[in-house]
Image 1 (spheres, rainbow, N blue to C red):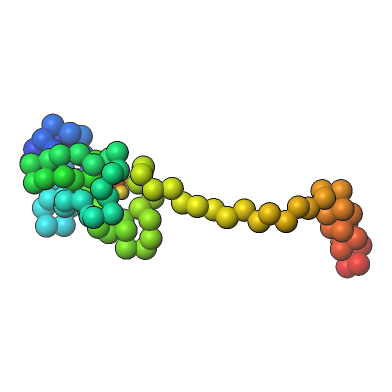
Image 2: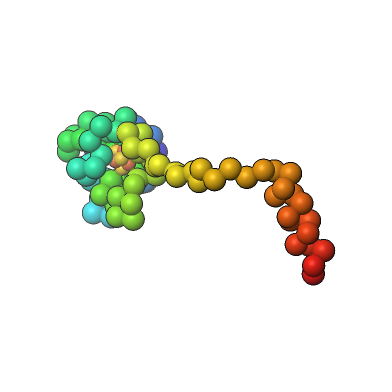
Length: 97
Ligand code: SF4
C-alpha cells in the first residue's frame, strides 16, 4: 500500500490498513554513513532511505548492502597459477586417495 506519512504516495510494504507497521510507526532518518547515497530521499521527517526504513541498522554489521556510494573492495591474490600445472596437481591429488 502507499505510505501516507513520511513518503506520502510511495508504495511501501510496511503500510497496512492500520497505518505504518514498522516499529515506532515510522521509518527513521538516515545515518551519517548514508550521506552521498543515491537512495536518500526527502520525506516529511527529513532525509530517509528509499530502500530501508531503519538506515542506521544497515550499518551495524559493516557496509550497507544497498549503498550506492560505497564499494566493497575485494582483494584479489596476485599469485599467478598456471592452469595446466594446477590441473595436473589436482589430478595427482585424486590418484593418491
Ligand atoms: S541504501 Fe543504505 S546507505 Fe543508502 S540511504 Fe539506504 S541505508 Fe543508507
